[in-house]
Image 1 (cartoon, rainbow, N blue to C red):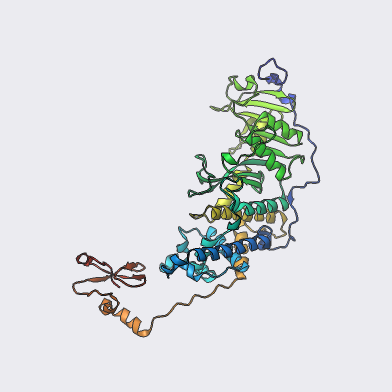
Image 2: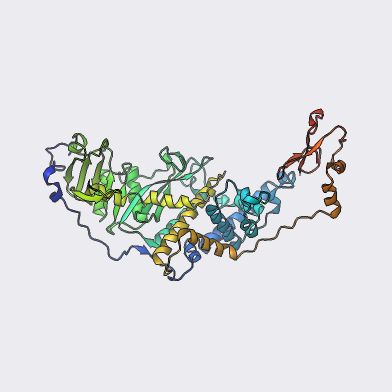
Length: 524
């Protein structure tokens, strides 16, 4: 198969490449029109598109599991909670559906207003950094306690660690829900691509964390296999990589071969006339032949050590901008010298000849049709990631399940905007920024947060505070103030008082002569 004399991959005449091979003829399924399916009315609001994926079913699931997990946590840790009376957990009350939607709306707004940490959104000490919208719609402690108890599975049903479903058990319901909705509401255009994407995370996971040095956004994290529309980055189907122990291989196929067929089948894209773009991690002769038998063309770069490649493409030395190709039935193998690189491509969709195109400087350049087909089909996953990270609120977290949920939720928001852009009658159409603003305002408008009432100081206490530290002797626990020099800390700065108070106290004063004391150094 790999020698020049074999008939399966005969050597081609380089002078006659343009006329030798034309695009493959496949039957196109005209019943599968690309674009939105089961979409709302053209005059629907942005929040209606978001609710296509954020349905009542998934909201009820998360709310019920979160409330159940919070009850279990409080029951299991009641002894420890008795020693921490100022813990946020003591203020926990069950979350409602409206509050959870408002919680997600606040999270969406964090993606539009980037700040270094959660506390910065409720910063009222520094006027230049104050954002009054956040405390109006949700209390800081309430937001963080919801984030702490956010939960998706039933822990009582957790399988054994050796069970095949253990690794993704905690997010399995999310995977099923979003995959089903992504497929139900949109059919991709002809060109689709499959590639990996990363959910950044450096904490502990059930052996699914990966390291990918070529990913600039997140080199450590949870890897996803994504099937996306190459035209707009719409995520059609995905799988979370479970590690080498979770590889599902059948029918004598390799893992990558089985993965491609599984994703295409799950998205219902086989026998529809689609063109798939893949990179050299997936491409093989067996895969492209099976896809072609399923009425699906494909183009991809291939590693030179793959079995079955013709020697004429692998070993022939070419001059710059020169190509050589060989064909086996409907499968074309082409090598092209592009400066210092010599990519080898396999395709069942393109002719081998050269085409004229235009680069950024508006100068015509010559490029093989196979490479043009590959560029058209590949890049849908990277395009989706680029759009996703632009307005996504990413934070460090100790819980990998939260990272997965917010990543999938962000991809659902992006998919909802793509459907809106194709379906709406708005003129002009909203930008993605304004679409998100409109959706989050609708999600937070139906929830009125409980007002936090704090005890106000009496007039006597305020007058005492204005007179300075000389009146603070009554707050010192058993230590005289003789020989101590109290000074005021800068505005907004406080330190913990360790003078023996029964409860934790933070103060804006400090003692500069604390070295003479062995018990405490800060006094209220």
